[in-house]
Length: 164
Image 1 (cartoon, one colour):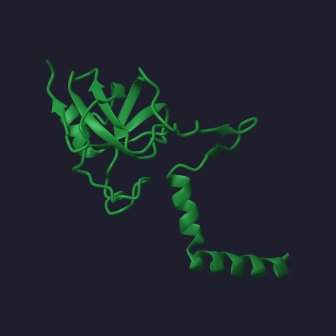
Image 2 (image 1 turned 180 degrees about the vertical axis):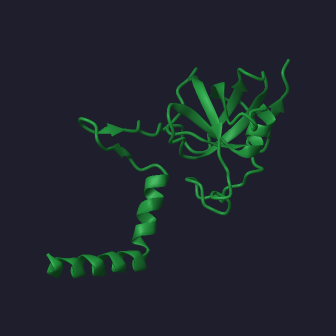
């Protein structure tokens, strides 16, 4: 048994030194098909949409992300994570999609741009940047029920609204 341990250790060190392990981790974080172990068959994440269907909407739980761990890291779109931008992570929508997010709890709305993949916890439908969560009034609670739909907003325009 010991004679097989050294080749495995050497292979692991070579893999780590080549950076391939980091690349594999990045692919897993940013949109590779995830397989849940311990289930019958493979429970896979739904595929990424090539375009948003007309009259598409989604209702569910949103959370926010952006603790110190994400600062300076690249998002799935390749840009550096910016906690002050109005951005979000969605598992299926095309990167660059603009969404109107309406908080059912606070009545506030904000337009965000999808630039990352996620969320990866529970049955959440959207991960918001800290600024988007602040403008929706859910920064303190962490999660909130939301309605999302495609937004008709010019590419350089960022929009937020208070309850009516």
